[in-house]
Image (cartoon, rainbow over all chains, first blue to last red; front, side):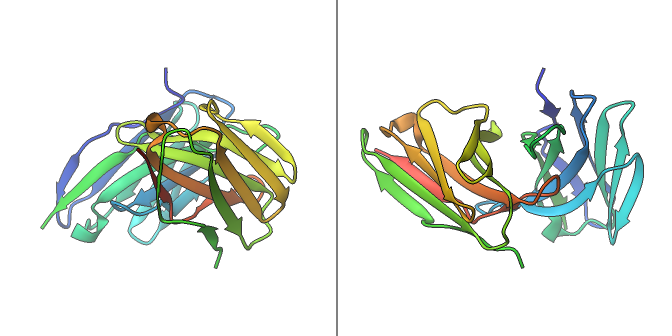
Amino acid sequence: QKEVEQNSGPLSVPEGAIASLNCTYSDRGSQSFFWYRQYSGKSPELIMFIYSNGDKEDGRFTAQLNKASQYVSLLIRDSQPSDSATYLCAVNPGGATNKLIFGTGTLLAVQP
Amino acid sequence: DVKVTQSSRYLVKRTGEKVFLECVQDMDHENMFWYRQDPGLGLRLIYFSYDVKMKEKGDIPEGYSVSREKKERFSLILESASTNQTSMYLCASSPLRTEAFFGQGTRLTVV
């Protein structure tokens, strides 16, 4: 079992819809969780981080964390064509060092 | 703004060459990382460092070594480049227990 799993997609949504991206992780002791966006040919950029169970909102983005079920999700409201990218989930399993483990990413395509 | 700078955007090297990829960060971060990214395989951790002269192996360290002589600089070394090391290499840095910031990436082709 991979440590961090994401559906590779592509996930296709119409412009203005809500895009829902999901991620599961295997290490129950994981401490912190991150969502990165990566445009084709570019490096990943941080969108959101979440440390506690529940929802965290930032503009059109909402991150949701459920540690009991070991999943984290990202909702993008009012999706725009410019949101089309690969979304990477990253998990810090905790411990003495700050190692980040990434999923393989979900490709999101927002159709105009 | 945090800046992580990788020395080259594109590199072409020959099989068997020793290759150095350099990464510099300007935010006094403790942690630095080297990942490679390949289609369908995502970001895989090669090595990371949590302090000067300290390093730990990631998931795919074979064929690579690293050096961190100064806090701001983390070098990835391909001892004898092979064609299966053709990839995008990404350096990142982070303070303790928070998000990582990435450099622009180096696309390495080994011929």
